[in-house]
Amino acid sequence: MTQEISIQTADFSLADEVTLLEKDNAIDGAVVTFTGRVRNNNEGKEVTSLTLEHYPGMTEKSLAKIITEAKERWCIGRVKVIHRVGELFLGDQIVFVGVTSKHRQDAFAANEFIMDYLKVQAPFWKKEASKEGVNWLEAKTSDENKAAKW
Amino acid sequence: MTQEISIQTADFSLADEVTLLEKDNAIDGAVVTFTGRVRNNNEGKEVTSLTLEHYPGMTEKSLAKIITEAKERWCIGRVKVIHRVGELFLGDQIVFVGVTSKHRQDAFAANEFIMDYLKVQAPFWKKEASKEGVNWLEAKTSDENKAAKW
Amino acid sequence: MINVVFFAALREQLDCSELLINDDNLKTVADLKTHLANKNDQWQHVFANSALLTAVNHDMVNNDHSIKSGDEVAFFPPVTGG
Amino acid sequence: MINVVFFAALREQLDCSELLINDDNLKTVADLKTHLANKNDQWQHVFANSALLTAVNHDMVNNDHSIKSGDEVAFFPPVTGG
Image (cartoon, rainbow over all chains, first blue to last red):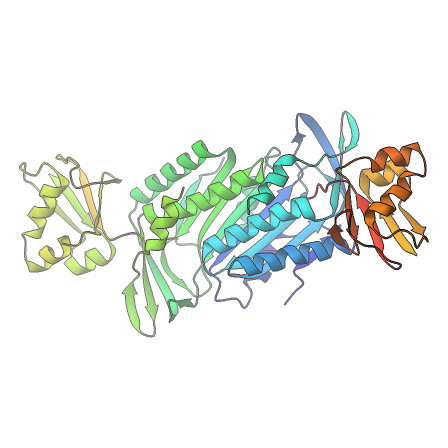
C-alpha cells in the first residue's frame, strides 16, 4: 500500500494515481477523483502563476486527520491526496483527491468532504501573480460555509 | 468539441478523457470524474462477468436529457459520459462520467446527479454471471431514492 | 402500424425482441398492454408486472400515453446500468 | 523555550519566519500573542487581526490553549490551499 498523502513540487499523473487506487482492489466498484488546476481567472484578475507555501509537518498531520474522519463517516476503500507546492503556472495541476468505494455515494461524499476540509484546515497558502502584481489570496467565507455543512 | 456521449464496447482511457475535458479549457479549475468497474462481489455472489444490453437510440437520448438538466442546474463547463456495453469481466471499466467547472461543488454535484439519473433512467440492463449461474440484475430501490433526492 | 420492442429479461421471458401491431383501436399504452397480455398466459403474466417500464419513441411514458401508427413502443424491466 | 513560527502573509508582514521565546510566564497562546504584540507597532497591528490562526505542535488551537517549553507555536493567516 502506497502513502495516502503526498506533498510535492513535482507534477502527478491522474492515470497512475487511479491505477494505484484500483490495483489489487476488486471489491471497490467506484472511483471518484477531483483534480484542481490553476485557472486563468480569479475574481476578474488575469492570473499568470501561483506560488504555494505550506507548513511541513502540520500539513501531513492535518490531511491525515481529515482522511481518518472521512473513513469514519463513510464506507470507503482507498484514499489518495496529493497537493503540490512551489510555483505553478496556468493549467498546472495543484491538487488531486482520489477515493474508492463499493457504493458510489460514499466515494462522492468522502471526496468532496476531503476537499472542503482541506480548503479550510490544511496549512497551504497561495500567492497569486497577475498583471496587477503579486498578492496573497484571501480565504473565502464560502469555503468556511462548505466545510461547516458536513 | 468532442461528443459528450459515447456508448461503446471498447474500453476507455481515464487519462485521455480528462485530457480532452481540460484541453483549451483554461477557465475551469475543477475536474471531477467517476469511474465504475465490475466488482468481484454483488450481494454475496462471486461475480465472474457482466453482460450489458442497452436500447440504442433511447440510451443516447436519455443521457443527453440528463446532461442538459445538469447544465441547467449547475454552472458546469464540459461533460463526458461513456458507457460500455457487451460482455465485461472482473475489474473492467463500465462507466465514466467527467465534469469540469470553475467552482468545485458544481462539478461534484453535477457528476453525482448524472450518475444517479443514469442509474434509473438510461436504458441499460446488466446480466450477471456467477458460480450460481446467470441472471438479470434487479433494480435497487436505493437507486430510485438517490435520484429522487435531487 | 406500431413497432413494439422488448429488452433484457422481458425479451427473454417473451422470447420475442420485436413485433408489429396493426390495430387502430389501440389508442394508449394501456390498450396496447391489454392487447399483448391477451396473447397467452406467459404474456399475461409478464404484463401483470407493475414494475414494467414503457418508452414511446425513446421517451419514458405512463400507461395513459397516446400511441399512433408509426410509433416505436418499448417495454422493459427497471434499468440497471452504471 | 518555545519555538514560534510564522507563515505566508504573516511572515512577510513581520519579516520574520521563526523566533525562540524563553519566558516561563507565558502560560497560554493568548499570553504569547500579547507578548509578541508588544514588540512594536507593526507586531501590535498584525496580532490585532482576529482572523489569525494558531497551531501548537501542528494542531489548530484557540487562544486559551496552554503552552509549555518545547512547544512549536505557529501563527498564520486563514489557509487558501486546494
